[in-house]
Image 1 (cartoon, helix red, strand yellow):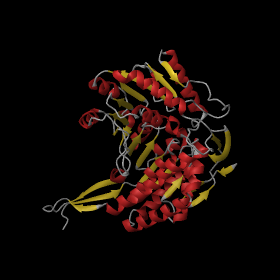
Image 2 (tube, one colour):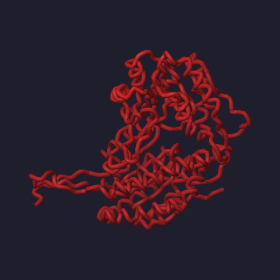
Image 3 (tube, rainbow, N blue to C red):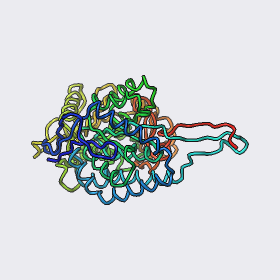
Image 4 (cartoon, rainbow, N blue to C red):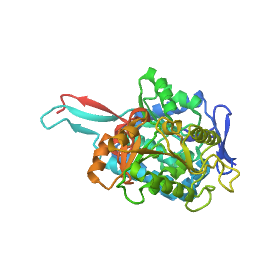
Length: 476
């Protein structure tokens, strides 16, 4: 059993102000493998105070100094790469090969990209050649960073690194369900030599530490990734102090498969939504299929879902692991049962455990067909390996169905008609549109419309979230 009860505050690992143990469960076997502490208001205040005091000097450091420290952090991250992968495989159930190739690799990619963007970034400039006005971009101050369990180091890197880069100080509250990767990252930060108080970590739950952070008068900005429900609460808690709130929330992505799509479009769509055990906010969980290929698509989808293996996270190979917790498992199974009750056709998977797996939070890749957009499985973010297939007849109908959701994070479309792809992409109401399975490049902005949040993470946009803009007149 790993003992991870201490918090990282003001450059030291310190004991919590009072005992409040919380066991971290391995979702592959339902057994605890680590114990952390859930922090209190006293712990949160100590971390915020450390960050506030450190900001006085940290905001004055040069871009070159910050680049040097981030490059040291990158070297340490590469050295401890496999430790990070093992931590996420245990804490959130990612198969070890996927934890290496995707989860841990994302943290390194974000570090590398933000270093590149920082080198090219101008914090000060003249308004224009004829003006005596000067524009300065200054760090916003102390940042409260609250990260999720489904993409642990990915989201930590997308928040912590730009905060460092722009001269902000911070307190990080990772998900209490998957905190070990964050604590390992804190060890790397400590080894890199960042000044005390610039980075602080306090574990806790949303109702405790999360609430203290979002309402704290000495925190200037909140960056939160998680559920839309929690995002609403954070926004309300932050209102009295008028702090900046950046949110990356839920999604219910549509994947429009036109009749002229490339041959493997349906199968690739299945693999996409089932990866990470369906626990991705921008997963294409509604597949809209043109009626002329609907029957063929259903057969391909069911066949591909049945080919996907489900197994424990520690095993190497191409498979999906468990979902993260008993709470998530129960929620997903209830929604699968609701889909059956509402009259959708179960084409693959279902509520029963996969064969040979009698322990752990495992769910079969599940496909529903004959789904209408008003069913619960089509409206709610299930956050598991579950896909709804919906037929459509025309381009306009496909766009209308896709946009008929409170979310707007990621949408997808498949067609070999380039002009149609551009036309449809412009009409989809989401922060990102993936055409024909093409991935977003490093440094492109990520975020959503409507109840999928506000603000953007990644690249220059990610840096700008942590900056205030100042106009100075009479600059000679």
